[in-house]
Every structure is written in structure tokens, then in C-alpha cells.
Length: 111
Image (tube, rainbow, N blue to C red; front, side, top):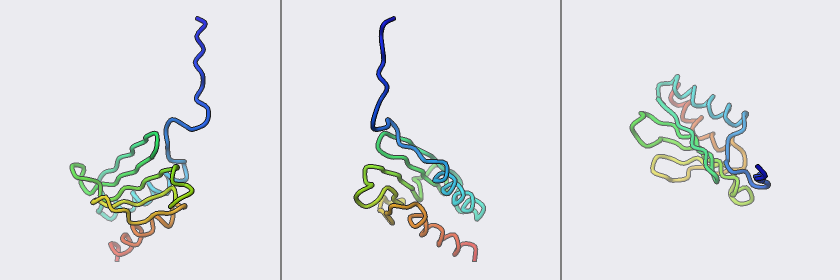
């Protein structure tokens, strides 16, 4: 009855996407689905990273992963775009420029 559980103060226990960030990512995902390129997605929330993965087919490895790692804020940037092979295609401090290579690819698909 007298047990007091302290609240975690300081670093959050889980990294997540803010509403504007998730809206931007899901908007791109919706346009890629409409173009017939992506079929499925997954979101993974961990203590050190939040990852959005987009799949061509649900049984494969993700074609692209958008990773948010707050620990890299003062280095290369929070955001990273990773391809299927695990190569980092783009890093940055803002989400828009990191998603630009995928958006350019979408423009080529529409044309």
C-alpha cells in the first residue's frame, strides 16, 4: 500500500512520430499506393528510433525505411532514408529533404 513508483523523468522510454511527421510520411505512402508501387507498411517504435517501412509486397524486405533517431540530432541529423539493401540514401535534420528522392521517383512513375 505504501509503494510509490517514480515517474520516468528526462529521456522518454520510446521514440515516436509527431502528428505532422506521420501525416507527411503517410501522405507519401498513399500517393505511392495510388501509383501501384507500394502495397504495405509497418511502423516500429523503439527506445532509440522510430522506423516507418514501406513494402512492395508484404513478404519482402522493405523497399524504403524512414528512420527517426533523436540521438543523431547534433551529428548527421535525426532523419535517414534507408533502401532495401540497408544503404543510407539521405540524412538530414528535416523530413522534407530526406523524403525528396522518393517523391522524385513518384514523379517519374506518374509521367
